[in-house]
Image (cartoon, rainbow, N blue to C red; front, side, top):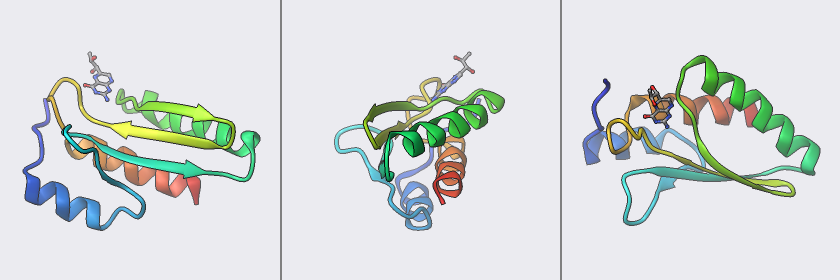
Length: 96
Ligand code: HBI
């Protein structure tokens, strides 16, 4: 199992991830993506879901119309790991 990142390592990784920030009071990271419409938001979720399933690492997320609110944390490890950073980077690439 991959281990939780230290606070310093998490900050360093976050500084390279546009739009992502720490969740207050929880060892997790979050970003809210806003698209032009529901179609684009759901297209993003579909592509991100394929990456998540391929890597066996899944997001907590909530879709309301054209926004997708994502929270990433590695449940097995009880906090943010390199797997969350990798999925966050993939989501940023998918969102363009
Ligand atoms: N997704 N975010 C997240 N965290 C996990 O620990 C996790 C997961 N998806 C699948 C998964 N773990 C499995 O490896 C275990 O539940 C068996």
